[in-house]
Image (cartoon, rainbow, N blue to C red; front, side, top):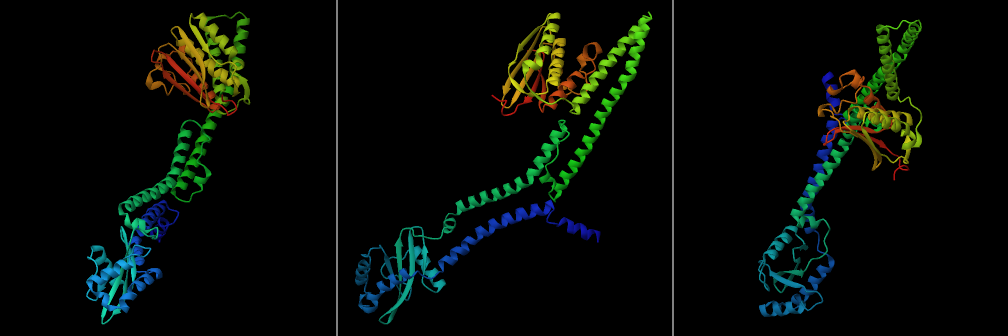
Length: 465
């Protein structure tokens, strides 16, 4: 019973196997039937009764022979033939005796072939050859002998459109191959569309867009592709819930840590007020300060990942980045480094000003820290995106680590020390800020040396120039 139910399930019309089988089978069957029916159509056309006007033409031509059997001599038949060819149509008449011998012409291969076709049909017919239309026979009695009269009209005459394919077999074969390719291509596109949608959703989910799902049209399919789509959406829901809970937990823990940290800082302040200034207390104060900065970074990252930021505003680059640029210029000059800025500060677009400023600030400080002597900040418009690029002439990052530097708590080999590399949250915050704008971030080493980080922020149609 179980094997029977599984067999019935395998043969269900909603199974992908059945769709593939029926698609290719029906497609090939249609082409085979279409090609195979051409000879049958040709045979049916060849056996159709002779059209009335051709039948009457043969009757009129044979009437003098019926009335005057003496015209059957060779010379007179040729004279009779020439008289009939003076008509408005260049008809060539062919007279055959009851033994199949052609009396007024040399028998050609086409004529002999047509005589056999007419004999098989059992009644007068017509057949179009490459350059002639043969028709007949009209059988009559002249005296005591029996004769058959055939006609030949030069040139091509109207025929059903499908006979073109029967006469051009190589072209028909090419069209059959093309049609087969089109049918198989349509079937492949129909089956490949949900797979492409599934791949796109998987790629966007892997890129960090936790709300990515397979579209409802694909998920409603009743075959295996629909089952995979629904399973993927269920998996994506579980992943999003798990990641959101983890991010929320990180934010909650960071927030709760502030309470004991505040008490610790208050106790340190009271101890210093009483004059208890010792190296141990100073060390505790320093570590408490570091812990406070770490908690602040974690809270910022958590808010960005949970999209808990202020609404977007239409502001210029200058309005959002002026203070950041002033601070970066001062910090660079303090370290005897040059900050080169090439921004269109008047360009306005919708963005989150605070988190964009924080993202650019993190990148500028990182570039200033590692630059040997110069830092470049520039902007440009590329198609539908605003590109912000921050570069330096420092040591760069190992190629194998370029894709990982935006992960939380990741520090390259050149930044292992806390004094120089922090906690590995600055670039993660920057990446989260760019993702909150729906953009992309990418890091690459400059050929001349140094690191270059590019932020690509999407623009609306009204913001594009």
